[in-house]
Length: 175
Image (cartoon, rainbow, N blue to C red; front, side):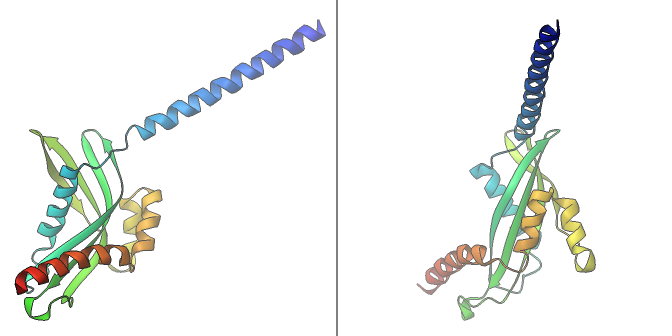
């Protein structure tokens, strides 16, 4: 009788262990299913949004450029939230590749698909000053806010991408 009790206890323990693992795995995969892969079309909407949002900030320059990196995106209730870091700079023909003005910042862009195109529903940047860090943490999931805070003040990877665009523009305007 004692052996039978131990055998049932072992069987029940194994069953419970596998059940817990199965439930845990299924919860993880449902979170992953909310993640969104950024398409070329979405990326172009992001670039256009950054340019449009900043157009007045550097209007004294001849040409403005942007570069951005996307940390991730997820979908909830038909809205796609895109967590990114952007670099926006202005240049003049007379000064060539010498930056005249610019800034870099994390941003949250929310898109919805309407009539087969992506529409910007929200554009948000963090608050400046002493509330900056907390503002980033409130805008982004923690896995992205940590990256955004780390990237603040160091947009060197985006600077290289942007510099290629600037050099191409300078070459085209001098010919």
